[in-house]
Image 1 (cartoon, one colour):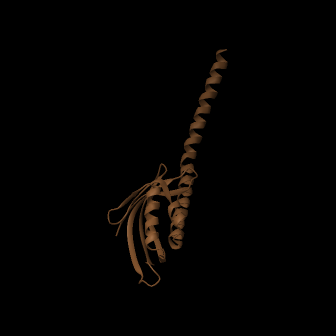
Image 2 (cartoon, rainbow, N blue to C red):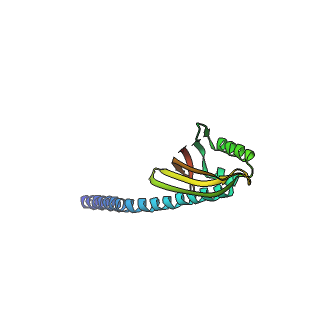
Image 3 (cartoon, one colour):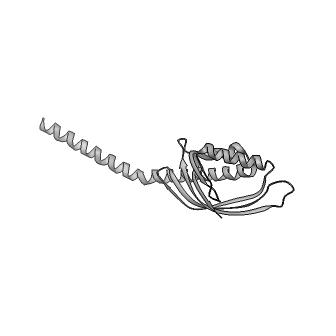
Length: 164
């Protein structure tokens, strides 16, 4: 009877040791996979941002934001929540219904990802016309972006702080 208990204990301890080793060996591999997947999904958000900006797609310009997002605009105005960002976008669209973006490029640097959040530094430059007759306006904006992973694995903007 004592021998059976000793064998059971040894098998149990060996199983725990093997399980612990296997888990710790897979941890870094799993993290690298998740990090690469996150980077791909973040790049998809960046591409979506460029596409909806060029198209001035009002629904698309809203879809890139998290529900609880905050946008700190130049000039001191702040929009808190996806709905408030949508209201601001609608006001600009109502004022300039013929706004046309002729060029837009964004470069992102220093992306750090941790626990479903990502922080990055971005530089946005481009050119737009408020009306077909108006002269083109160039912009060069820098900002810090906080992104949030969504439940489906996609990413959305959670906070953007812009400066010129």
